[in-house]
Image (cartoon, rainbow, N blue to C red; front, side, top):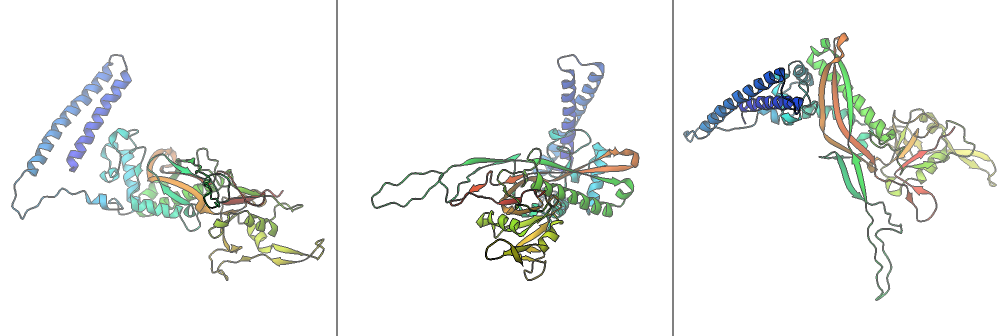
Length: 437
């Protein structure tokens, strides 16, 4: 479809929408004088545009049936901007300037903003794009997502699944090979009847939630599109990255992803008898390791508040006398500094990386140290990142607010801790340490 015909169709849709709105306003009553004037104007505009559309379509048909020499070809290709990951914007700041211009002059929206946009019927109001924002061009959305999925990010380590709807519903089973429910295997004698069993499935449902970042930018800054774009891109990525990581660790599951700490499948290790408040001792670490699912040990990482560093570096395994009545020495735990013998960019504990996470709880409280197999946390995302802007938030400061929206949801895979074949303790993909007060 050529640009002129596309523009005419959009104008007609807007006129028809106006007529529809006026009818809704009047309800079952007769039109007021003001409503009649507006309705007639919209109707006249729609009729005028319809005639223009017919003429444009006739011209297109005439061109299509035009007989030309074999050496001449007419091709109806898509605009080059549609195949450009930047959508024709040289830098991210140019895109922001176009979003800003669309708010100032809704009737003159930059056509590049409409690439990939929804139909006109989804417009929320005159001064915003489809569904309340304009889709950020893939190149720039990827750059923001790269910040969210940075090396130290928790989100980058979870299992991410893109979805098309508003939720992910999948069948799941939490049976174990040694359990007594679900599919079973039996030793059978010669000619003996086989014992029947069947799988036990549950429905696992993860809903998408909406994460919004508001970034202020002064009018003076916006005059420099290059620096404005770089700064806003960085700020949006950083704050969204923190909120997502924080939800994965601490989320309540209500209006945000379900976090590791509050998940029903998380395992908690009790503190030691007479353990001093706000400490971590070697026995805590060893018991946490013993409660992790065996299959998760090669994938697990330690998520830790930075106040835990000193505790982890100084702790040691106590050595008792033969009678076991008193401590006579100590052996250092397998903690290794970064880039040491392990060659890891992170310090390691029991051979697994220690990732400093700002969302971890203060030392001595639940969540200060977490042993986690993050591949067993399921996160869902939908679409890219949308952006919109408003001049009203900080109007008196000559500052505009840019809004970025990302849809994401998530929760741990297990809904309950796993019972063992032998022993009374449970296992899990996520292990925390109880409060030491």
